[in-house]
Image (cartoon, rainbow, N blue to C red; front, top):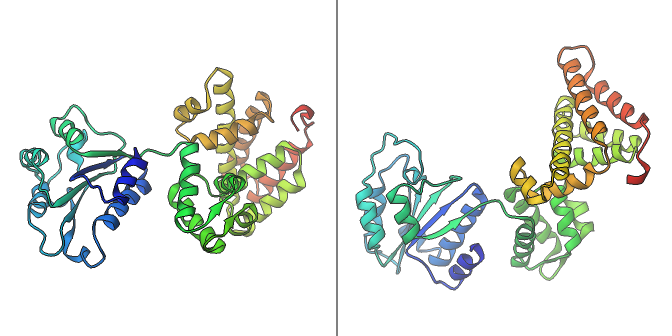
Length: 345
């Protein structure tokens, strides 16, 4: 759906009405920006681009703008933000003439493109206005991308800037930067600039330019624990401290990560697939894939014990019974002293 809509925009095949909704704000913004760039030249935007917020202005003001013939250029673009009347949200102080909006949906001005930008997970399809919007608008539902879509998005964004990318580099980039599109976009733009037109982004470039997130450092730390590489785990911990990460935050991240490992392992054992686990836990499928591989390195008892020990360490630190840094060090050394699981090394 998204590729088709973007492709039509590039070919300057526009709908008169767009409804963009969902919980992936970067995709919503990217779709709108692609539309504006394709529909209006830089010199036209001052005259023919207008933005209205339904939490501040009645929707009929935007419709009046849309019904005004462009003074300069062939079309207008009208952005209508936060159209909460498409949702189950209660009415706010602003009164909207939805009858006029219904009439506009049935007969939109031929010289205006009206975009409704609705940053909501769900729309209330029981409402007549929502049903009509879905019937009359080009609808884009911006949900978090699945792993294959995410990889394609990374590749496409790099190629749009003249660079190509190795598949192994995409894997490492997703591990390093995570799956949040805004963070990924920043790293991709940096990598494209480094590679230059016609260049190739490889693993070495990602290693050199993309810093690990705290969550990715914790993933690496747990991986070192699983291999009983405690010197390596301690070094990762010290690296985090050098980057001004608080030990109490590291304890919290470790606890969150071990809980995730326990949850994905249990759900996998009960027959859930990767996509089902991601949906049940509300985490990205790529993160679930990595967690499943790592969880296999621990027994159920080890995961339960680690969570219990992390809770005890958190209590000791917050109650003042133990130094924050020492609490993490003792945990890592305690985990390293346990016998490894040779079959899973």
